[in-house]
Length: 89
Image (cartoon, rainbow, N blue to C red):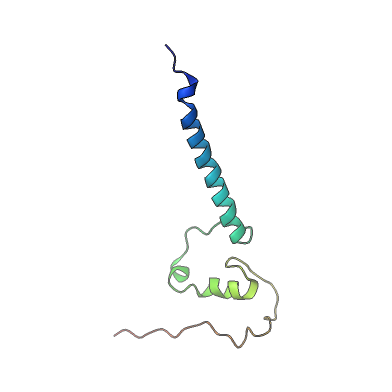
């Protein structure tokens, strides 16, 4: 005795919806990163300070953006995001 396919349709629909939503969220995240994949394995420098990614965002508009222009955009040289570290004794 076989299983009627009508009983498996809800599972197929749910699995399809999970796949569609995962693909949509992946595409949305890729669009937010300027067409690049999401960062994985961020090192200690990026986790604690975020200074380099913040600098990239200020220069290009994207956290993952990079530029090869030798001259900074107007106003960038006066806007310093670097914070002084707090001393711990």
